[in-house]
Amino acid sequence: SPQMFWNAMVRKGKKGDSEESDMEYVVAIHNNMNEVTWGQVLEWEALHQDVYQAKMNANADAEAGAGPGSGVAAEPKLLRFTGRPDENSPKARMKMFIGCPAPFDRHDWVVDRAGEEVRYVIDYYHDDDGKDKDTLPGLRDKDT
Image 1: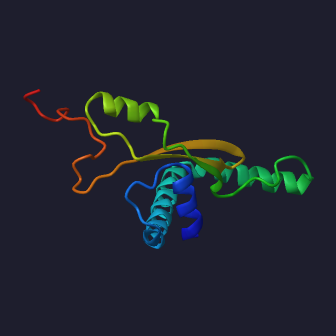
Image 2 (image 1 turned 180 degrees about the horizontal axis):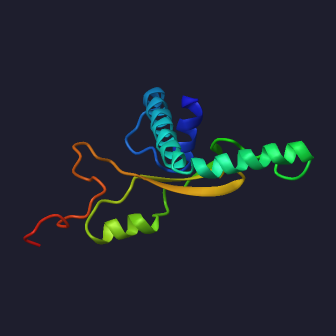
């Protein structure tokens, strides 16, 4: 809820120049950001459909013989995510080393990939005009 979000920001000393009345909008943006991130995680997980298919086949075989293998997710399932805004990921530290800005937030998302826990480390950056895209400067410039 907006009130819970506000209370957490105040408790963590992160309110800055925000007002309590802004929280309805902040929560909507935050929820949208998480939904977009989950969509991107699903895109990555789609690259592992062979793992899910193999587990589903193993489940079918196990159920026929009442053996192990049942209860494994046939699609990605979010197990948990943890906000870690005060910890920079190794990738963020490398980007900062070459002059990119620091992320404003970090989440670690743990996904069940057909019985295996897989961690995604997501760095969030403030980027009004696209200047902070995840590229290395000069790699395509033949003069560097």
